[in-house]
Length: 348
Image 1 (cartoon, rainbow, N blue to C red):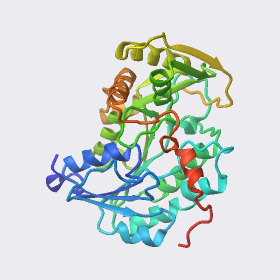
Image 2: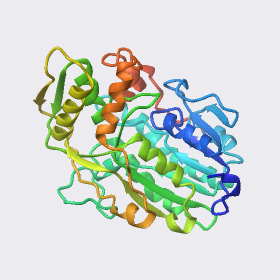
Image 3: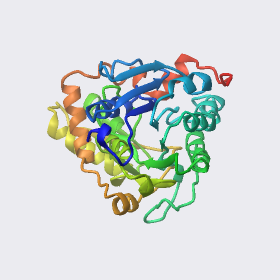
Image 4: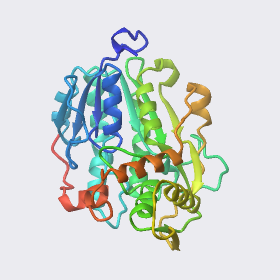
């Protein structure tokens, strides 16, 4: 797709907030290959080594709470893909005020600044974790939001704010992705499938916390493909809408068995991998339906959880993740806490 000839959206320049993160380091190269000019706006808490050097890529070290800096950075952009947030922040590990200032307080100023700058399409990446706990056989986009953590709560609270800004000139769309898994140059080992694989490969023991919780997953290649497609769909097909984006729904115990089987196939170990089960205070459980996005947009993931585990095994085999069991750079919450970010919002 050549964006200069795409009459559907005429999008040529894309801002990606949080573009140096786990998903951003897979998404940004895809946008560049598609011919877009890309501006990454990121605090660079984890550096930028996961991003390629490219003449069409601009990297801005910026805090989304700094509305003045963001307003300047977004000038000339046709679309925004908003990934930036503090992810998976258990309240007992992180200052709730910090989470609120980054994940919620600055959101409306950021949306308003984008619209005022002439941005024509704004994709907000929410989360399927906004559903909290549900025993419904299929959790659709109309299901009540029952957040269990600050992260879930603020993700959900941002959604109606964005939809209020929907207009013919400013297309807004929300994606609620399942838990993402798979390899990224900026790796995270605080996501379910990635954690299980890391422990299976490097400890030979998988610890399952709880196990009965249902967790939807989606491969990082599929979800980043979707974000690119969201720039291409006709505006009237997605305007003001919300889409779940998942693929496979399993319990945590099933995911552990799957990781164990694939790692056994892909690696040579002196002893069999063991699974140990313990209690948990993380009771999030839901079975996400992705029927709407398939029927309305024709979007269907193609990469499996098995693919994600195999990709990670191959990355471990080539020593891409040194000290993966101990290096806190692979765990978002621990890194943010270690850096001691200030919860006081930057002046607008």
